[in-house]
Image (cartoon, rainbow, N blue to C red; front, side, top):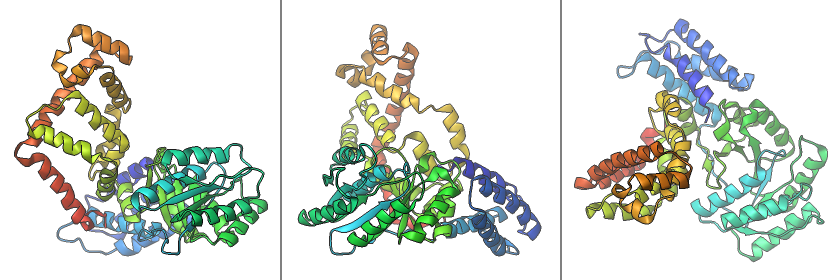
Length: 456
């Protein structure tokens, strides 16, 4: 996420690290590079000017703190200005109303409203323990209602059935009545989109907005459209009382222009950020954490939250008990670890959030192919249960059979068995003298002292 911007900013800030004092001259040199990096990231010119001015006003003339290098002082200022541009603090949904609380989604066609509706429903169900109902008022796009129904079923949330021969306003009113009857906490309304802002679309959404009185009217926008995303959000905000933004496709956005422009141009907070295709890939937007990730400083808080949400605790406890009993870490266990890492976004997703990994993440990415993890799962799945539990029994003929079943080569089987051996040794060490428990307590300590890791 925002890889290009991260690399350019890191290179821009590196030159000031060797300076003994922050002066107007050496700051100007670095700021010119920062300014160019932001413009190339498609950040709005007005936002770039405000950002650069804010950094310069704070940085010029500051004494070098005894415990910090000038570069660290400057990076701290840049980090804090990034947070300011994106909104100072995260803003949650306003759901403290008589249920059902209505959330209305608006946006252009192709921005990802329908998938965002389901991701938000899933987020509310799993994180906030809310009973959610989904409805689509898009009677124009072929199969739009069917698509939302299918996704709602996948997320295991309620869906209000509607037909394309009905008026969108009637669908919205009827769904609100049904949500109330079913004691739903939240009703999410997915509205129709267009290829551009037009009077008919806006008139329809305005009418729905007036009749159902949503507590949240969220604008869904594609992060990959850069500052155009901010300009489109501004146009919507002038006609609708928006309360926030959902930024989609952030995982594919190397530039970051939308994330850095939307808040300043619209005055509305980014509340969520979609970072993948799975229904679980929605994150609450925390400006301080995103700023830290942009500067390559990681995001340990989001990583901890992701571990808590996506790691199968029962499997983790089962594995710990197994190792404590002296049993070996087998290939079935190895496959579970690979699956859980993939659930957390794979190696790239982890590297993006680990502090201090920014400088080596690109190098690692070049050495480790994400496809290898898919291949490893395929290889293990092609083994018999006996072979997974007793990998030492896998001889030459078994390797040939496994390779044929998984579409791989003998050397791929050998590499996986070697990697498993290494992992087995590491797990054995962790299981001794409370190693695994100490590791978990360490993560808990990070969680309890979370204020240290917000990049502030």
